[in-house]
Image (tube, rainbow, N blue to C red; front, side, top):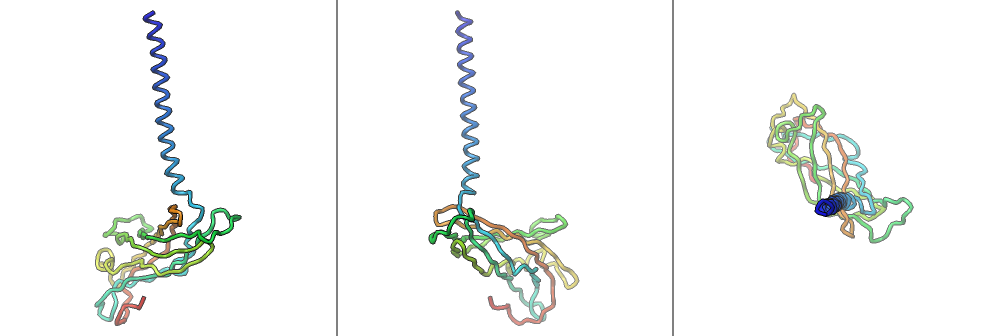
Length: 203
């Protein structure tokens, strides 16, 4: 009797442990699935059509005849918001509110220490609403003045050119609070071009 009872308890414990493990796995998978769905459940897509018209940006690290000042760099970014389902008609209230952006710089040689090999990444705020089916173009600051006062840009002389790839990521949300984002890259060539400007270009 004692052996038979132990066998039942062992089977019951095994079943209980198995059920607990199955439940834990289901919850873990459920958590992963929820995060995945949350990142993808918006019914619209935010797309970057072009940055700086598809051209590279020549960024002067010093401005003025005597390199007496530095200027930030802005480029135009064109975006589109479209339905994920191409057969779906655009709802008038469907739109994406752009809230922020991030820019990271990389080099083709793999060297990427920020403040040594490439400028520090930057982040900023946006305040723009784009409706489904519409295009929008807006200026975006892609190189800040401070970056030109710090290495590696401050180390550039008239015989040096630093070429980087800048990854622009835009973040926003739909009217129904679903998160969306979009990324694209473009090239920046940093150099001391020896200009004779007397002031930064008007933005």
